[in-house]
Length: 455
Image (tube, rainbow, N blue to C red; front, side, top):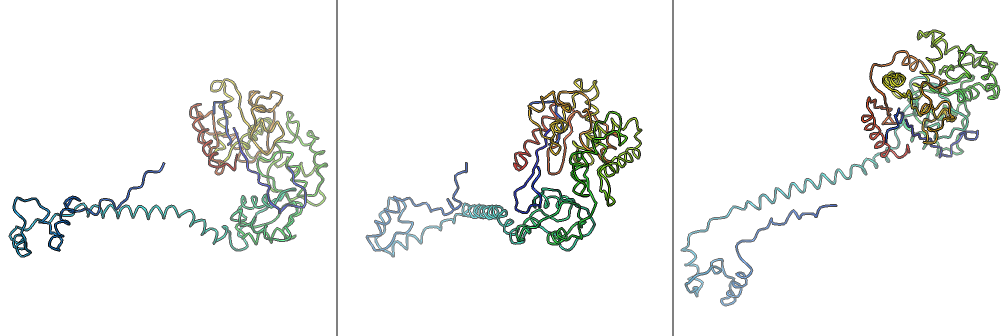
């Protein structure tokens, strides 16, 4: 499985703090212009005179001062008449020649018209791109109007740039486009300074309204934290610190006392049991109490899903893997089925899940799922499911309700592979055979070729 990522950090609009730092399951298979035609050629067809005959006629015309008629170009045994009246008499006695129908001329006009239409159509098609670009330039970037529709809480993190903030606002539908907000930031002098934390904004705000709200101290929510699904423990501790002003060191120290939170005996850290949601803590909350709030909320989610206390560990381990690997909501049960099929020796003898997400987690890269050949071959990584069969030794993220439900209710199917071929939409191809999977990987590779920004 590979997950190329895009992490732009290239703009001048930074926070006050210094910067911080295709899904898929594999069985390691081997992943002159034409010469232009003159449309007018052949349309003007000469009569039956030949150059030689024309020259002969011209020489004959010199004798009496008149250009010869067509009759004078014909071959005859009679002597040519010597006077104009005789010639007229002779010509008048001949029957009229039938007029030839100029079919070639009509066809030529039709062909010329078709060619002209094709040229015009081609010119219009060729100019569509430049015209669209010009229209977009004149119209400006896509933007909403007004102050918004529905309340939404947005988190700004320590070290994020203006580009990061723009991406966050777009992902939560606060602003309509990255360009609308980012270009506005570039025009502001001095560059805006955003404080890390949670902000109360609205969906579908104009870029100007969103920027104004972010700079308004009243928009910042005190003691509020937003934790997205799939966030790892180390990152959650950072989020809680930013939202509550609790020292990160205090949260890290509290998290090490795993036994104090009532986790399953297999747990060696809080990973997997910090439920992703939006929290508002009371003033003066301690580090331990803040983390206990998250753990208790995870227990509540497991209980609501019907998970017995004895089954919490294995359910959370599988759900955390699904949460990290799945893209679209409809694919969660399918991803669950792929991993369960690989745990079945009758279908997958090696028992190797071969998840890049587990390998990346074991290397300490909690925000990516891409890996190298060396990392996938590293047996010293306890989370390396390319080397160690079965489920990973522990959760690799903190799952939400959707992933928990998928772990409990997987889809029916014989799939053994999947690859997310479109990283923009999250569309994923599920396959039963290696050949089908190879075709899916080829489709992903073609998509990546067309989207080098994900490289």
